[in-house]
Amino acid sequence: MTAVGEEATKGERTRKKLVDATAALLRRQGYHATGLSDIVAESGAPRGSLYFHFPGGKDELARAALLASTVSIKRSPSTPSSTVVRSRLSEGASSPASRAWICAAASR
Image (cartoon, rainbow, N blue to C red; front, side):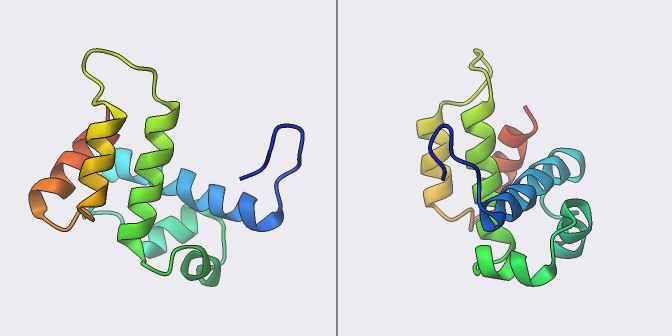
């Protein structure tokens, strides 16, 4: 991450494009309907950049998108706390229930 007043590097900008595109697609289509080719097309980033920044693939990218979304979401009574979101993400979104919960939280 860059400090205030510093310009982002090309790699940081590419990573942000991938995360932003993933967040938008997850909100629009959901986790299971979003493929890596969709993310690459939406972001305009090269496929190799996706694997460079997110070697864990779609799961790692979805976790980064959700974490980025929780930072920018205004708190409301229906918004899950960042502690709850982080605990679900630490589970690795491996269970179907965790994935469903994360998708629902991301769409709020």
